Structure formats: C-alpha cells, structure tokens
Amino acid sequence: MNFLAHIYLSGNNKLLMVGNFIGDAVKGRRYEGLQPIVRKGVLMHRAIDDFTDRHPINAKIRKLLHPHFGKYAGVYLDMFYDHFLAAGWNDFSKEVSLKTFCNRFYFDAILKYKYLPLKIRLLLNIFIIGNRLKNYSKLDSLRDSLEMMHKYLNLPVTGEYAIKCLEDNYDAIKAAFYEFFPLLINYTRIWRENSDNRVQLPDSFLTRFKNQSNLSNMLSNG
Image 1 (cartoon, rainbow, N blue to C red):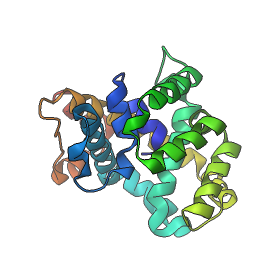
Image 2: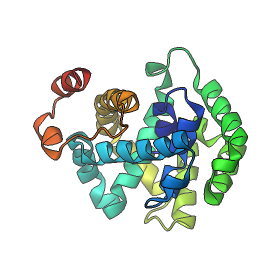
Image 3: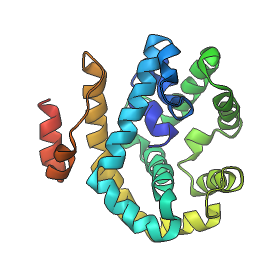
Image 4: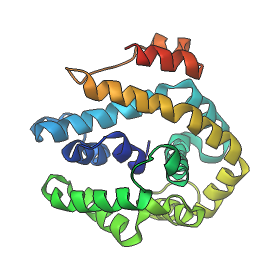
C-alpha cells in the first residue's frame, strides 16, 4: 500500500501514524532504536505490505499490470489503490473528510518532525506544498506524482502512460481495491489490538481463503 492507506490504517494514534508513514525509509533492524510506538508503526507498515503482497486478489491485478510495468507492477498498484481510497474516501471514513484528515496528518507530522528520516522530511514538504495525499483522488495529480517517480526514482514508464494503463483497467482495479481493502482494515485492526503486535498469517491461510466472506469471517473470529 502507499502513503495514504498506511496513514489511514494507523487509526488515531499519532506516533503509530508517524511510524507507519516512515516505514519504507527504516531499513533492516534500525527500527529498534526508535520510540516504542513509532517502532510499532514501522512494524505495522511491514505487516500491511506483507499482507497486501501475499493476497491473491492483488496477485491477480499485478499479473494484469505486469506487461506494462514489469517488476514494478506492485509499486504502481499501490499508487492506484491510494487513488481509489482518496476518490472513495466517504466509503471508508464517515466522520472526517479527506481534506481534514490530510491537514491533521500534515500538522501532526510537523510536530513529530524529529522522528522523520531526512528523505521523509523532504517528501513531507512536497506533500504539503502540493497537498499530494488529498489530490491522489484526481487523475491529473496522480499522473504528476507518477511522473516525478519516473524522473527521480527511475520507474520505467511516464506518468502519462501509467494513467492510461489505469484508465484502461479502471473497473477491474477498482473492484479489486473494494474487495481487498475491507479485509486489510480488519487485519490491521487485529494487528493493532494483538498484545505482542506480531500478528502474521501463515502462507496457507491466504491461499485457502480467497473469497471475501470467508476471509472476513476468519479475521473477525481472530
């Protein structure tokens, strides 16, 4: 998942949110030196990515995107999923608007600036100036973000081409997101509540429970 989803899935704990936000920038066991709740957020980030990467719904969509993006299909899918979360925000957040949510996060991240690695501080500045998180809802803004990633992170295709691929497969990717994201919400809820903060699903679990109702029931029952 990408930044907006990671932040949303953190719940209301601001330090957990910061840890989830910086997760990609904290490599190996460097999380061990962080403040405990921030450390938990980094581990939660990894748990979210692991669950997302291994789930068959997303494997199917990555296969669909692979001819266009090669080994980076998962990176682009993460960005596309953030678009659908932003565009359909009211389906997942009834109490707080996307604008308010993003503004609160920017404010809280600035207050927790000391916990942010340098590359994340620079990224946060870009997010705030362009209100990137909120603007993921707009394809033009998403294209601009993808173009920046193409230029500065050496991703294989232009933002224009990536958005064309999204538009060509829009319904299929949207359906996958709406099927998968409620499962991820449930999974992260269990992860946050688990006493040792190390909830992991065995490989056999994900291959066995491929339809939404069975997986949701299993997660709900712990």
